[in-house]
Length: 502
Image (cartoon, rainbow, N blue to C red; front, side, top):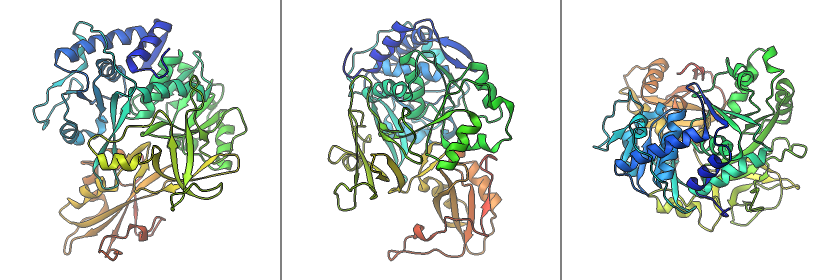
C-alpha cells in the first residue's frame, strides 16, 4: 500500500474489502459501497461528458444524503476540485461560483439557478445517466476540495484540502476511537465541512463500519435513531450534547449500544462526568480545524485529562507524524503552563487558501500551521484551549465572520452601523450578539431586525442576542472598539431562542 493514498485509491480499496456489506443508511434507504461506487463512476462519466477535467472546480449544492456523496466521490475520481455549499446558504452561491471560477454546479432537481454568470448547472440524476468512466491517476498532494471559511475581515477563504489530507484523516479517525467494522457511526453534521466528509464518511468507508447519515440533528428522535440502527459512535458538536442534556430523562437513554460521542469543546470535569453517567457512554474529545484534520485527541486508553483537547493525533500505519507546540508573543516556544498560539506540523496540513497568497504565507510561514487559537500544556503534554487570536465566531459547528452579519444589518434602512461579536453560549461554543446603532429619527425594533436577518442569513449566522446602543466606544482611529462591548447578559438586550429560527 502506498504511504499516503489518493481518494481514487482509497475508494477502490473500500469496495474491494467490503463490496456488498451495508454501508450507508439515510432516509432514502440503505446502500453498499459497491452500489454507491458504481453510481459515482457513472457520475464521473457524466462530469467528463460535460467537459470537466482534472483541476476544474465543481460546486455541489446538495443536502446530506446519497446524492451528495455520488457527486462528491465523482469529483474526486475525476481529479476535479469540489466546493460544497451549504443548501441553507444559497444566497452565497453566486459569489462562490464567481470567486472559484467554477466549471459546473450540481444542484437538486427543484433548484432554481440565478446569477451564476452562465456557468452550467446539472443534477445527480443527469450525471448518473452517463456511461461509467475510469478514475484518473492523481497525487496525494493534489487538491480535492475547497472548504469555505470566513476570514476576520469578512472576505471568504477557500481552504485547500488535498487527497492526502482526506485519506490520512479517514485512516486516523477509526484508529483514534478504536473503531472496528462492527461499529455503526451516526452523523448529522453538514457534508459541506471537513468533519462529516473525512471522519464519518471516509472513516467508515475505509474500515468496514456502517454510517447513519441524517440531514439534521433532532433531539426528539435522537435516541429512537440510536436504537433503530444500533449506533455505537455519534459524531457530534458540544451543542448537540447539551441539547440532549436539557431534555427530560427517558428510558430510551439506556439499553443502547452507543459507546462514544466524539465531540468538542471539552466540558468542565463535573459536566463531563454528568454527561457520561446519564447517557452511559464515553465522551471522545478532540480538536481539529479545516486547515488540518490532524489536530489533537484525548487518548481513550487512559484516564481522561478533563477539560483538555488532548495530545497530537498520530497515524495507524505511518506512526508519529504529528507535532504540536505553543508559541508565545515573542515567537519562542513557551514551557508548560504558559499560554501561546497552538501550532501544528504534520503531513496533512492544507497547502493554504485558494487565491490568497499572503494569507497562505501567514498560515504556514515556517512549516508549522498557525492555528490562531491560544492554548497551554500541562506537565503530561495535554493541551488546553485558552481562547482565540482571531475574531471568528464558532457556532453550531460552523465558523462565521462578524462582518458577514454586520453587512446584512447595516443594509437595513434604519440602521446606522452595527457590531457583531461572539458571546458564551449556554449550550456550547458561542452565540452571536449584535449591537445596533439606529439612524436618527428612525424606528426599528429587535423583532423587525431579526426578521430582516432571517431573510438574508442562514440560521447559524443569525444573531441570538440583539442590543441597541446610543453610541460606540471608539479606538484612536475611530473604529468600533469591540473589546469594550459587553459579552455578558445586559438588561437592554433581546434574547431570541437559538432553536426558534430567529
